[in-house]
Image (tube, rainbow, N blue to C red; front, side):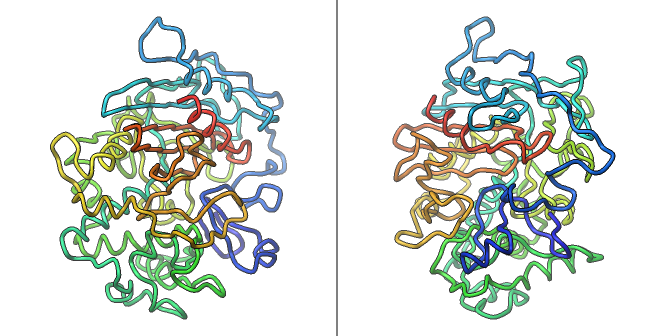
Amino acid sequence: MTIGAVSVSRRSVLTASLAAAVGAVAAGCAQPSRAQWTPAGAAGPPPAGSKPPTQRPAPSPTAPRGTTPGQAPTKLAATLSRFLRPTPQNPKHPTYAGAVALVTVGGKVKTRAAVGDALRYTAGPVELPAAKRVPMRDDSIFDLASITKVFTAILALQQVDKGRLDLAAPVSKYLPGFAGAGKPTVTVEMLLTHTSGLPVGASVTGMSSNAARRAAVLATPLVKGAVPGKTFRYSSVGLMVTAYLVELLAGQSLDRALKAGITDPLGLRDTGFKPLTWLSKADQAQRLVATDARTGRGLLRGTVHDDVANIMGGVAGSAGVFSTAADLAVIGELLLNGGTHSGKRILSEATVRRMLTNANRGKPAVDAERPQRTADHGLGVELNQPWFMGKLAGPRTFGHTGFTGTSLVVNPDRGLVFVLLTNRAHPNWSWADPDPARVEAANAV
């Protein structure tokens, strides 16, 4: 998003007044405060002369689809279908136009559901007639938003396994451009645990090249008063910098590193950056899930929702990966199985164990958007966060969310992986808070 001359991530930003009130920029895995500000080209009142949908969108005619044709909808599908309508938590609009969920236990699919529409609105936003909508499918392809950070963390930890990256080393040892007050003490591990003191977003607007934008990201100053390693502050910048470490040590761009290090070895054919470059026209029409449908950037479908990632060419360590429920479940199973899947080892067992261990025990968390959030975090994954994990939360439960309405929850005690992908940013991210649906779906599981 762009606020004045500063471009920041859509994940979470506090207003200047709120930042002053708390004494620091507090960032989290959440939407910007809708009552406080409206970013340029983003959600909020329609531009002068435009007309928003005049009627409250009715629930999608698409019936919930469970594991077997002809069966009654599963409890999970029924729960997801409730959020196709306005709810007490979100009384003005549906939470999302559609959703896909998948649950595996012990690596086997227990239930799946697809409800609503992958495309319901065109630019404006204008609600499409039923005949022009695209129904949600089990294999629909979503913009994962910040779940991209999990992939980036895995790629960085692969470099740890290869002996090329030291988690305890200062970031500046590898990236000299990572400089500024307080930054010499920021370690690689702090980037992955969101304790670096870096803000949520970076200023990358008005620059003529990706090299200039990259330099600007590396030069991003710490939050005023932040002491590296002491406090959890969710930061997209930290994972963008992590991606630069991956590119440096792997000797290839992040999208190529993703393909070589994760998607090709695991056979994930529906996962990657910039899906318009690798999906067939038929799949683009039938499987791509839409996000925004407002006038700032028009209808987004197959183009990354995050503005910073978009400015960076669609590839960033913080956002940009697209995937399906089935492919994302493989990532959950990979980590649940200690770094292996279908006989392919992606990470060492010791590294996965460290990845899933709480590195922030006892540290405070600064997140005014989600005051119930704790600092519990491994290396690139959230730990024990009931605000999106619901009753699946526990000391060993890990996962991540994405601003577009996506989430991954893995409960090792149950051997369970739960993927919930929604298009809650379609047509407008400010219409609803995605967390009530996440919690109720997790509770249904």
